[in-house]
Length: 444
Image (cartoon, rainbow, N blue to C red; front, top):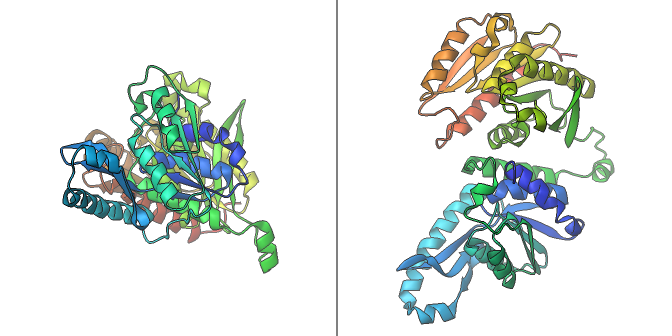
């Protein structure tokens, strides 16, 4: 029903257009709700924050919620239930102490030292990637109200009809894109329901905060700052007979733009690539997250391994990007088969690629073109991704350009282990910053 959480966020945002222009704060439930909330906040041009809540589960049955706690000392307790199940005050206090400690740890992890967005007198839009029992969403709505929200809207892509109806008692408005009758689990309604890592939540919150705090054009003019504003927009890239969807983010005075290539065509929506792109943006480097295949083309899995097709799309995109930003250098970030496409495209005469980074890539699929690559190339592979690591070692021996192989200890192919993706992002950022900013002149 939904491609992934980004797709769900776009579709949910379309149902919330009536809130555009209102005094809205979008609150994502971590972790899976934050990517959905990010798209909603961007569409509504509203600030984004996390809403961290902890249910107060009964000692003998933790899933039975006696209440909830939230930041700022907020405490919501179902006194009638506590009386019925005969929970002593000291038992409730012990549960609350434990959950509040965990709440504070998570809030610091996600928000770091940024202040919580004030909800007083505003409309709070509580967003998750879906609801099943609705217990956490219900607690979040209650906490948002207790934190001063004048109006509470619960917005989710999917949920069972009975739960959606039941939760209307704690929200002023409930918006749900799909309410299928045969509902078993949230994940069954997503083609890609990969776990969202803490690092991705932090990156999305940072990116949203930077965007929301960016001065408007009028404010820039009033301050006397005539530098051109950064770009942050959805784009359509013409590549031969097709038009490819992409997201272009170019900070002010960015020295270069990195084009992301993924063999499945899902780069624009990939949480991992979005995380790396956010790190690059914060370092002042532009990014273009691109779908190398159209939705129809993705249905034919042979296209994923058509390196010539993918490389041609990258070359066309590079020409388009030179036209959009002629004074910046261009790099490629490729994952899986997209890495092979990036290397083949970098080998094309006249592409002027400043640097290439491969994450868990298949450089061997570049074939004979591998030896023609002149762009400095960084190969990043997980230490436990043994087959791909061997392929990268063999490919490195055939490269005649500046190159380096970095192995992330303990990481598997998707870099899902704690800290692994963060290491990838750090390595990629340093490589691109070095090669986009410190050598040579702009490519065009």
